[in-house]
Image: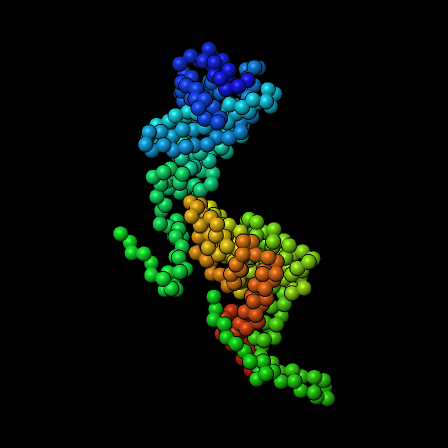
Length: 175
Length: 187
């Protein structure tokens, strides 16, 4: 099935919770209501015509202009050999969405990564803690307005430019 | 680390042929360092692709074993640590702990760009900008990753450094000399 057919099937079942379909890009995607996402995901996984048995990836994208964080899910069905891209749109100040690790177990690490880098909270997750950064790290590094802390546990996070260190060239004056 | 002083062998070593056999009078530092520098054991600590080159260097073609340099799996049996690969902030405290577990005298060899400066990943949010931020480094090896020849050369440099060190002054201290005086008076 192509994305348009899947979209129509979902629209029949869930109505207004399936917000829109975008076919203008290379990978067409479906935008769904974050409140109903767990229910929709269960349907995508269980329905014999759709049967998305594999979650390929979860990614976050930060849009500070629209005050949105979009979480992108890539699903794949080994049985029917079709793919679906699902996006949920979350408020940037308080991004919360249901966890889907009860459906696809590998979602746990992908959600942890997204939580770590974007601060998206996955409600009902089995084990939601940071994956790449230390657990007591402050801030979420992949957000556009992230500023790196000067030091972590007394370790400086900056390295002097060796060109300036040996006084070969004068460093540019700070504004 | 400790200050390296050069010892002139010709001034301090005498060999005498006597009726009882050959007697050699030498600098004790030299004798001990000769033993130490010929059995430098390193802690296997590979976190990235430099680890592959490290394994190559330990293998039969580059053959580190001929210098008495063999790998250990425990920091408590090792003389130095080869930091081979990218160190993240999450890993940094573990590296420091491994370093603290090494028995004195201990050395650090930083292998590859990532370990030296953060390398390719130095603008990343999670990578430590050089292992010298957390442990004192004796030898740096440039390269991404360095060839086995480069690592072998670095280990030869470390051997030189170990061979020149005033071992008793730096690590044994005055206790040893008190002990020697005590033995001398007792006899």
